[in-house]
Length: 187
Image 1 (cartoon, rainbow, N blue to C red):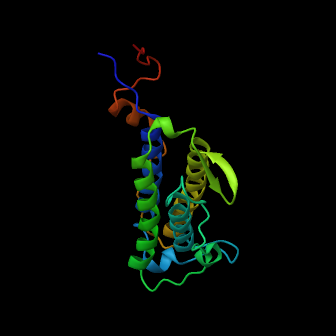
Image 2 (cartoon, one colour):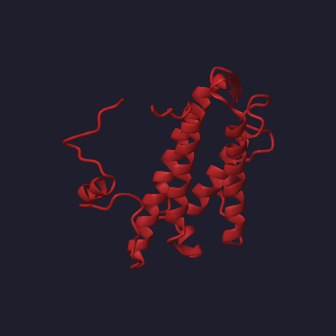
């Protein structure tokens, strides 16, 4: 029996979730103090990047088809100021953004992908807005993961790899039952 491929919206949701989990798994390997540490004076700390991601997602995906994605209540510049007293406050901001995105994604179907919405007055299809948002999140998650690895290394903390470890591709493929020399034939 043929397998039904996931919908486009379901695929977007899965990719957003994958990136969210990468960032969270990286951040949990660090102390609160390390999350607030910048690699140098010209870079943002992980906490600031997470605050920005939360603010961006909350603004973009709250009522996206009826209001501009840059909400009047959003203060983007404030997102780049570390004013959290504790990790829980940071996580509340992060989670609020992801909740807005997840709620919006749950309301969409593939039939909505050509609907239009505005971001800073610029017209986008939902498909374009989701693509741009996913790219933006992937960029910042890369920053979070790389910064986490560097900060863990500086502190002598053993890093728990978030993907396939170096030199582990063969074992990973074998555990998945995949042989690159003999890929399965699609039906």
